[in-house]
Length: 232
Image (cartoon, rainbow, N blue to C red; front, side, top):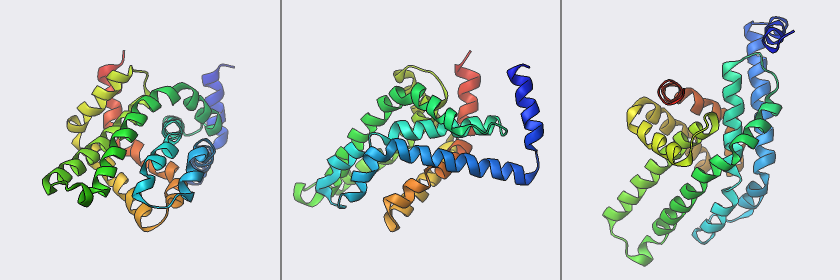
């Protein structure tokens, strides 16, 4: 029996009712979340132990390095589930995404970490350094734009095989090309930021798979554009 035929047969056994679909989604989210935590834990544990102090910003950035590949693998696994609802092997898909995309995700994630950490340190020491108000506003705008660019870059790096320079260009291009995607991603990031600000980093980490699913849904138009216009 071919792989495709086996998949169809399994899909028939699995069921297409609402309860089956919800159960499959919950299972995928839970497994993906658990594997995200496993792969990101080398950085997340010390991050949670650090005080929220400006002097710890470089250490915070260092702790966040493992998060990039972990998020990329989660996006890969969740996107696979969207394309095939009967695929109940999210663990294998997650590890495949991690192997395929770890290097590519780090090449976009680490530069973003460096840039935003420098901006955060400038904002934190604005009074001591005498930074003018207009420059602070500009830095905030740059940080927000860079973060929205990173979301696009991680989604593209997770789902497609491009050179790093092409990922960077496409991520910047789609900030303006698909404004609804940018707006939707901004809403997801705002929700994550509010949970972190008024809750804890731990709570945000526990919701990464849910946020990843939301980002994939809001990025759907961009993903289709990339597939149609930039892949063979």
